[in-house]
Image (tube, rainbow, N blue to C red; front, side, top):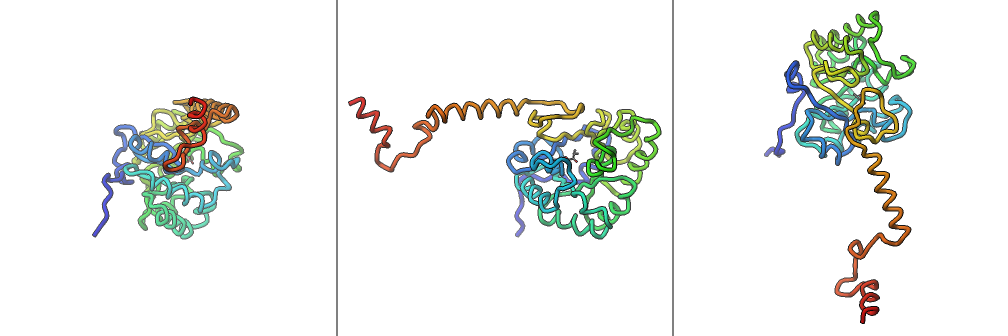
Length: 286
Ligand code: KIV
């Protein structure tokens, strides 16, 4: 007998057919509780390797290990019901050969229960994307600013602001679509180039710092919540959760120091007996 979950999950082919239609909505998620909150509002959740910087304090995504992606990926799958879960392949887990990429992507799919993987790179990843999709692994590609190549790019630099960069990035999009990717993240890209690629590319383009011309949008959750110490120009902070956390923590510290917390309603009494504090109040009042 099969065990069925109540909601049907969005799949990679469901995202593919959204090309040119209602904008695709996505956010990053790294743990189960936030996944539960975001799940009803998004089409897919990305367990991005940005978690290395956002949650684990690394300077870039380069040091993120595969096991960490799997641990967070599994948590997000457990916390969600309807959205497609895409898990990033970390640096070093797929570039060497299509074979190695398959082995690691299969591990991610088996051990997390996610519905797709994402990897960075355009033309150079064409063969690998083809190899994976032919063997049952849906692949989301990632072009433009590719953070795992930060050391080659010499920083997190917007792509396509010079006309002579366009041809190579357009070719990236063409190759990965032809190789079988079901969608492509375009990060840190000039608006005119993002518009040109979105117009001709047969798969949905998901923008992050690539303008409203894309078929969908993604943001890092902590950035749009106002939790990150610095955010790039393309981020809109939809809330100021960092300030809310700080003021809550300040109130907690004040209450603990003033012995106002924990109060009686937060305290367990012995079964059938008055607690010392209640006794004291009664004695004082008697
Ligand atoms: O790792 C990540 O969060 C990403 C997004 C920036 C798209 O790849």
